[in-house]
Amino acid sequence: MIHRMQRIRIVHILIMAVLVLSTVMLCSAQTFADTSGNVTLSVGQSFNVMGTTDEDFNDSRDYQLTAVDPSNPMPGGALGGTYTFTLSGDDEHVFTTSGDGGTVSEPALYFTRAGLYEYTLEPLTTEPDERYEYEDTTYTVRIYVKNNPLKSGDLIVEKIVCENNQGEKPDYIRYHCSYKGEPAPPEGDKDDPDKGSRAKTGDTSGIVMWSVTFALVTAMLIFLLIRRRRDNEDNR
Image (tube, rainbow, N blue to C red; front, side, top):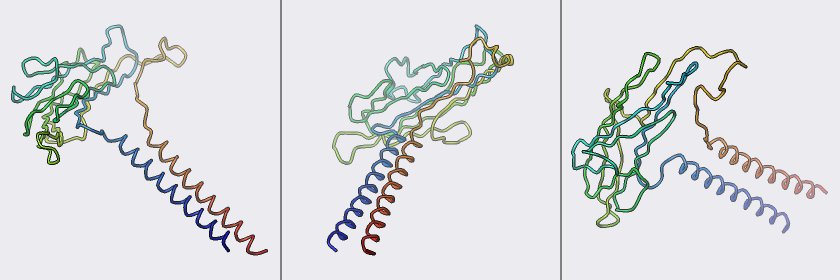
């Protein structure tokens, strides 16, 4: 009877350990998906290439962040309340923010007082010719900064809201561009197999979910094996 109670207790401990591990892994996955620390403003570009390219092909575009109020904080390298940057291919430009005076990665916006700060974000480069098609959306960027209720003298960047010309507020900014060249040659005749659409990888959410599932299944198998062994012993 004592051995039976011990086995049941071991099974319960194993199940609880698996559940705790699963919760930690899911929380870690959520932290990875969400930006931790200071709020950031991400501006991305997707550049879809169809067909072949020539020597004049260019997948770079210039963008500009402009302060509505010239006194608004600006990243290093800004001139006259404007900051220009370039995105190439499937690239991304991330602006970090700080309200506590701490150093963050550049380009950064450092705020010294609470309030609402407005900027406009727009592309500068137009289509070189009819083979290119660019998205030309202009965004209004609003950054909300408030006093830190837990630490006197500190500020918190509460949120960043981006709104396009149609009043839509997307979760992130991404400009879509495309290039349509001559049809690609038949397979095997390509000079450069690396030319074509670009795609990013690196999503780890599937791996995390498979790991959690494997852990739960393992725990259930252990439970069933111990229970079967216990039943066999009881039937002797």
